[in-house]
Amino acid sequence: MKIRHKTGLTLLALTLAVVPLTLTACTADGGSGAAAGPSASNTLQQVLKRGTLRVAVLPDFPPSSVKQPDGKIVGYEPDIAAALAKSLGVKPQLVPVDGTARLSAMQSKRADVNISSYTATNERAQKVAFTIPYKAQGAGVLFRKNNPITSLKDLDGKTVAVARGSTNDTIITNSFPKAKPVRFDNIADALQALKSGKTDVAMEESTTVKDITAKNPDLATLNIPPIDPDLISMGVLPDQQIWLNYLNNFIRNLIASGQDAQLYQKWFHEDLPAIITNQP
Image (tube, rainbow, N blue to C red; front, side, top):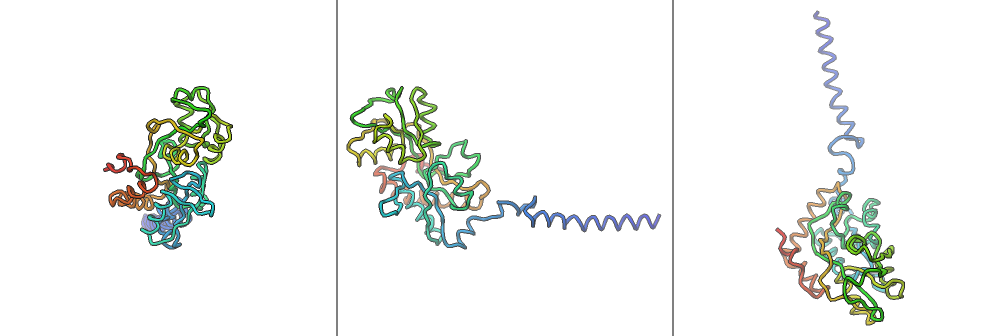
């Protein structure tokens, strides 16, 4: 009996000794430990250590962001990116993407954050972590003056250029089922299709539509409120809670300080939407 009792204690001691070793191994090799997996990669610390903030932006979405002939990308969102980099004490590096490459740019580690007029839809939020919004926008309609429309009803039967996978793609598909969406890989191609007569109309963000009509005398827009206004947020990978917390804090301070409103007025020549300034 004594021998069996001693053997039992020995087995128990060995078992207890193995358990922490097993747990340690799981954590170290990226298994089930709390510090393992993608969450162990703290983007905030990586940015600080690297000294560079890589920001995905749209190169063809004035005045939010647009690539100039000299290659420099300027606009409201590049200015926000610069302010974010300054808050971190690092240098900004703008990474041009189109609407379909926002997520892959982060997954491939080309970008740390999207400041790319990213609409925080429920569908996207299944794969992307969104911050609180820093602006709000809705859609507008562009047409050629020699082929005018007078109301949204006139979209019935018309070919409408949109950027593939964009919010405008969703709007024209769901809200205007009698229209004929023509999808392009990026905003610039969609607008060029309208200008060249390949489509009757183009649908794009309302402030971009205003900017384009001001620069293109052959184009016009419907004088209507923005269609289906929505909230625009920064986007990061879903496992980056520490990074997301910092970005949310930055945006709150950007709004509270009045800097967001100043940048919005600078580029859009109108007040920052009240839904942003009145956030709790």
